[in-house]
Amino acid sequence: MPILPAPLEAVICDMDGLLLDTEAAHRETMKAAAADLGYDLPEPLFLSMVGVHRPRNRIMLREAFGAEFPLDLFYADSDARFEAILARGVPLRPGLHRLLDTLDRLGLRRAVVTSTASPWAEERLAAAGILDRFETVVTLSDVARPKPAPDPYLKAIDRLGISAGRAVALEDSHSGVRAAAAARLATIMIPDLLGPTAETARLTIATLSSLGDVADLLLAEAVPVES
Image (cartoon, rainbow, N blue to C red; front, side, top):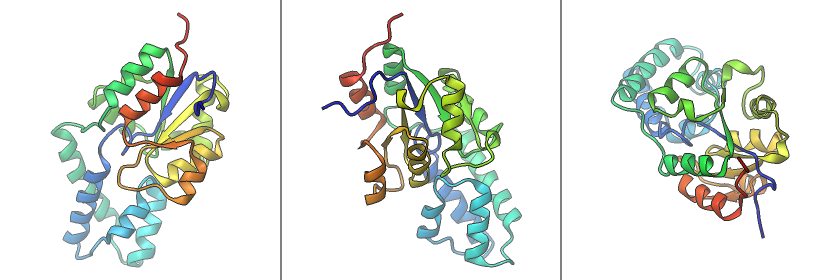
């Protein structure tokens, strides 16, 4: 039985942890920055921050470590370490180019929805060589209410000029899944650092291992758009 919307017109993708293999780098740099300040960043705390926008992450860190935690120094150090890693090349998630080639083959439109702000989101996609393969990029800077609110996905489908019922969202984080589902998009989870849960199982139409698996599903179910 088909699980994708029919007809399917667009695929909307998260960025970090979904298109770009950057969440592990964030874990490395944030733990190192915290350690240099004399703090231990516990794994459960870091994982709870995955897919969550920075303003909320700052609150979470302040709640965990107290008002004396030097947030600005922490992020300055962490960001510098992260940019040094990206300067060596932006890592891509497995199957990304196969997915993009499949979207081209099927004539499906595509957008990025990310909790990273502008211009950093666009710069990161450009450095990875994939910015021009997306029609639009919705960033933290474009919405009043970021993920897990539905606003970023609603903005994306508005820019694409389609209805929610004609698109599928791809997400790796729990926060992102909640946002896409709240926008009434058929959502597929491709886990990275966070595994699926009973909640994500309820909110998604599928959980797949890689973007290559998404390409296989699209090829099996989607009808190519007439040119």
